[in-house]
Image 1 (tube, chains in turn blue, red):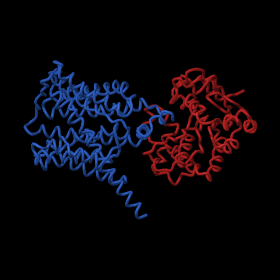
Image 2: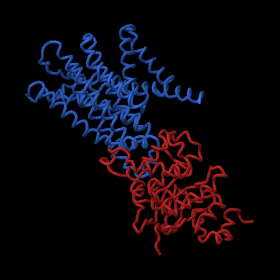
Image 3: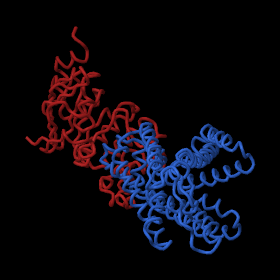
Image 4: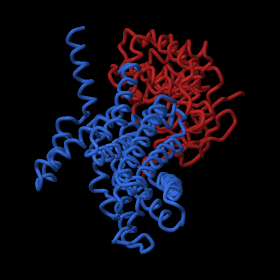
Length: 318
Length: 247
């Protein structure tokens, strides 16, 4: 893709993101969730696609963001927006600290063992939150009411999540263009070689996870407020839904490509909503089948499939 | 004697197998040293011990006078001691140009310096070195799509990109088309003479190593069997025995 068309797509998406909430107010919640899914897929792809570390524990950072915001908003005694801002900031700091800690412990493990280790992380976090009275234990936490006029709330969170998604996309796009981006790919392609060529692989890996944690925590605080309620297992540390979707969306769109995760999130979210609308009662089954179809027929994702087709065409007619 | 690399009594065991048994050898600055020996004699293991990919069980390795056997591969590489692999290791999903860019010395830096784009100087150097090994046309092709021999050349170019003081090459001509071997020998010599890279080369091809190396060490059964100039090694009865077996 040329630089020009890159900016065209971004421009079109930016206009759509601003205009759609006004054109179709009925879809505003769907759109908000779409931006959340885009953040999920983009951040997952940084480790899973670019660095070759398949994490099933990224949901932990999202949950930390949810709870940090909820606790600050409950206890800080500040006006709504000040408390929200402080809560998001605290969530980001805590999530990055967690990424430093878990990264130092887990990122030394390779391949499937890393995936399994991170899976344990998400489950453990959910259990801890569900048993901790300070954060409402199993009954979760309610977020304070939005102070603005009726209907404003949805707009506010839709645009906030949109802004985070854009910030996330542009940050990652910039990072992938630096030596750091190449270093991530090198670690993915041959970790031992990267070590032996003098790359400082441990700080590189931990830093990548910190960036992931930062964006997930911010989006977590916003999503918790948008939903209005945090359940430890179904919202904050929802490993079986959000945690798995992150992986699927990135794979569906194309791992390790710039637009793949965005495309994957859009296709996945729309498909899933259609299942809910037209296959109610069977939506989980349909989703399961979709997962199988993705893995069997699109192991390289949509972007990978397009690239393969293009290469085949060029190869056939040189 | 100014030994750039000095291996002193290095021992490496795998369970009950002694792969390296009190091996001592040295490489002088600026030379091309050869390391030969039958299969399983411990050559590649010794490379691992020197470059920090395998922890040693005894002895010490000195690089420019500094003990390095307690260091891991990364810090040793940043000192300027690099190796290549017999099976070749490149970054398969990255283009040749990217393989080269991330192999530059500037990639050794901390996170702050990594947050810059690849410098124009590095890009230019990458182009020059790709041309040097004859892969310039393949610069935008993914490393994994190259043939085995081309991957070997790419790995060699990546190593040069890293500007090592001492480069350990594990069978650089294995799997290379015989008609290209003379060109490769020429490039190894030029890397040594023009870029000032000291070389220690493992090689099974006797014609290659006898032509290339100034001095050769022969291992057998994890021990140093003989050491000397190529002509002496060629005529050494013990070396002939080790390769051909005693009649």
